[in-house]
Image (cartoon, rainbow, N blue to C red; front, side):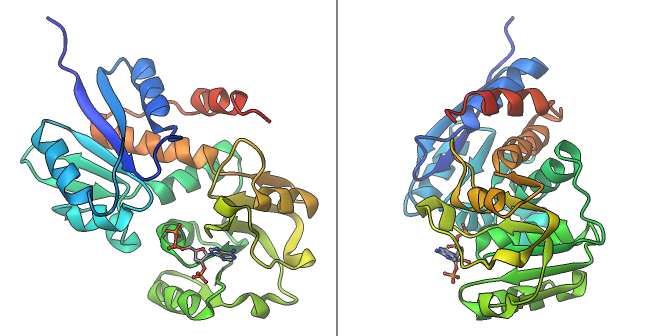
Length: 278
Ligand code: ATR
């Protein structure tokens, strides 16, 4: 008798270039799990009905990407602590009692990529996050858990950064400000959580913002260096990384939630890296 194939999918718009189906099929092959994983273009307006239909038709789990993460948070019957903190959900998992659990694996994916894959310790370091939107919100708590020396959120609209920082103020040394307040400050790690890379734009960064041997990390990824990754390279970053590793790590965590087995990620990251047309 063949084992039943459980169905998963990623919902988002646009979805054409999603690497998630490839990543999850590689995980399934590696761990001997029988799953089907599709990609479906779903707009914000369609999300609730599409997600309901997916689970009603026997689907076991969904990944949700732009622009659906807040809607997925609302859709979930229950939420993990990290999903509650980030107010966004990228992973929905059908539970044995029929309820749908919402989780957010983005922050944990970033931390794993930084610490495990790139041997970058955050403890005691000065960290700057560019942007105060949903992507930024999802990584603040996991970063503060690593006990950085200081975490600064900077945003074009300064008020949003200040508000976000005060929301997480009880968790660690966090401040929020506008770009003009960064003068004469330096950081060991700068993380780009703005959507600027997606339109080849760069937030207004001064030349000496990155400390000697500092590291740049863009949550976005592309086949060629993003404008922020390029900025890091131009400003003598020790490493200037994009979010491909984070993408694979957040997927591995979702796979673990669904299947109870943790896939190995390095071979998958290496494969996707080798396929970039640099
Ligand atoms: P996401 O969910 O991807 O974080 P979002 O919630 O729309 O998307 O937030 C986008 C973030 O990118 C915001 O912090 C935005 O700054 P504002 O709040 O001032 O709009 C930031 N952003 C977008 N384009 C930018 C640019 N060209 N320069 C600087 N910041 C930019």
